[in-house]
Amino acid sequence: MTATVDPRLSINQATLKYASLAEALRATAQNGVQAIGLWREPVGEVGLKTAASMLADSGLRFTTHCRGGFFTIPEGPARRAAIDDNRRAIEETATLAAAGAEGSTAVLVLVVGGLPEGSRDLVGARSRVHDALAELAPDAAAAGVTLAIEPLHPMYASDRAVVSTLGQALDLAADFDPSVVGVTVDTFHVWWDPQVLEQIARAGREGRIATYQVCDWKTPLAADVLLSRHYPGDGVIDFASLTSAVLDAGYTGDIEVEIFNEEVWATAPDEVVRRTAAGFGAAVSPSLVAALDSAR
Amino acid sequence: MTATVDPRLSINQATLKYASLAEALRATAQNGVQAIGLWREPVGEVGLKTAASMLADSGLRFTTHCRGGFFTIPEGPARRAAIDDNRRAIEETATLAAAGAEGSTAVLVLVVGGLPEGSRDLVGARSRVHDALAELAPDAAAAGVTLAIEPLHPMYASDRAVVSTLGQALDLAADFDPSVVGVTVDTFHVWWDPQVLEQIARAGREGRIATYQVCDWKTPLAADVLLSRHYPGDGVIDFASLTSAVLDAGYTGDIEVEIFNEEVWATAPDEVVRRTAAGFGAAVSPSLVAALDSAR
Image (cartoon, rainbow over all chains, first blue to last red; front, side, top):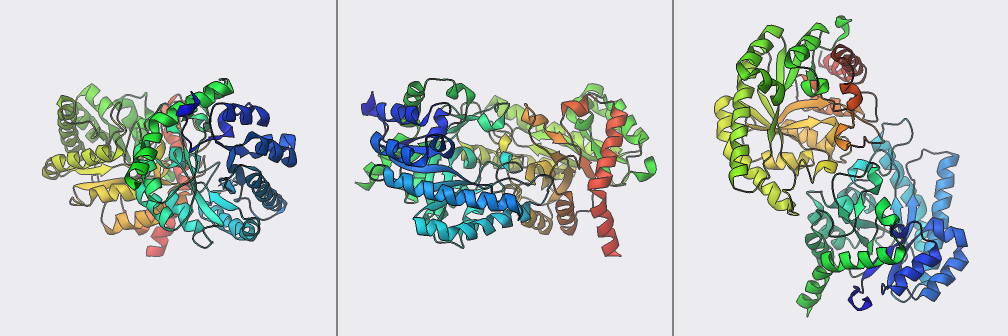
């Protein structure tokens, strides 16, 4: 079974939402997956030092920490608290990346935040995202951490992320060093974008693809649209064209599968990891193999 | 009551989904609204000739006919049937526009269609939209009808419309005369787009704003995301900036309110028209007045 697991697959911990950190690390490693992306809450439950030690013991590579952001809050105590919390997330990311196996990456995924309560000012909210990046960039640089702006699907523009396209994320990142501010390319969020292939190529040219995440899109959407993510291959996303574009753009890192889905969450973690590996193997791995072959 | 209704407001018939054509015309006219956009199904229920006569008797301007499209079907009998049906829709649009009061416009709104069953080929689907436009453009030109490509919100990209942004719609329209192929600017579908203001300006320069439709966006989305449209002012859309951009782009036509929403549909038509007029008056009319003032 484990022989068939793609060596570049990473399980994002959100895919195993109800598993503890220990259980997530165990299920991931025991099923032959070599890498994992972690979430702050389960790491916080055991404490950073313990989490880092558990991660080191697992032998897994660490791929991303999820998540920072909440940058659209207007100036005041709530914004200060968010900025401080992002500083802690940067430190956590550095610590976990150092604890992971060789090839780990220090990437903090950023969900930038939606419109503040009662506001209709998208332009202002976006400008506050830029301000927050400027404030945190020195901390990230000092810690050797890349902040990975994640454009979220436009259906989340009002309540989760006022950054909705890869092009917009790259425009925001442009003022910063690519080792400090990059982007997250997540198939679920960008697959529909008529500019996606050219913006992936641009992200590569600009050295900004900090992480590539895959999961599938299928309709009807779940009643809570946040939970509409599916195993690769179960929906309509053309993983071949997106994955080839990401590889052509020079991305050589691990590839996370991150699924928010009540049905998946209700499944036993071992089964979820195996299903994820199988879906990834069928939908994503062929592009990885083809790229290796053509490079030979 | 009717004294306060904006003269540029048009009620899109979908806002009164369960009303017959007769009831929709009556509720619209009796509550002081001067224009209406119709849907094919209720027009078909009474027959085109009768519908045209009823529209003429109402004294209302006719603003759009909804809808053509379904252009992504691969070649074969189903595609031929869709093309033929669009030809009928073009004829209906011309007939109704001629029957409406002075200032009526012959605009057929196009919802281009999603991915065909089992397909992941967005690029191919989009190319078939272009093919369909090329096939129908001569018919539209002969009938004096403008085909108005409607970019739909990206959450509908897989099942309703592979055209998701105004920029993409304008790219598709570029090969055709602006009097024959234009675009629909619908606030619900485009409000989130970081390029929306520049693309509205471009649409104006290229003479392609065939209709401007308004309704609001609010979360959480309805369980059926198709039914998440709200009265202007009830959500987070900044109608001032979008409306000013549309006016600055040279649009002088009527402005439709089109709401798909079970609660709205469960309300009596007279009440819906009055609520729509009030929301429009508060959220949209100030921009219209400001534009008039600055033009003086």
